[in-house]
Image (cartoon, rainbow, N blue to C red):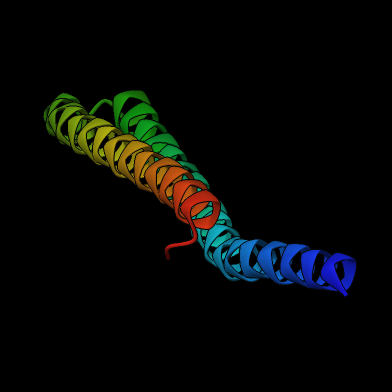
Length: 120
């Protein structure tokens, strides 16, 4: 009878550890999906920015070939502004991604500590 009580206690204790870990695993999966989504969005932004800058360079080239120096000069200035804005957006995207990864890392640690101590 004593052995059954010990085995039952061990099983209940193990189940108490597994359930919070399983619940936390869904949070971790959610965080991973959010980070993947954010990375995909960053990639789309980068591709759009690259295409926009390429189109601007082609306009500059066309204006220069047609001999319109003033238009080419103003287009170059616009390209510089656009490039600077794109760099700032890319920098902000990277900061946001870093913050999301850091938050996910803290959540994983908190989930692990909570699972080990029996708290959620």
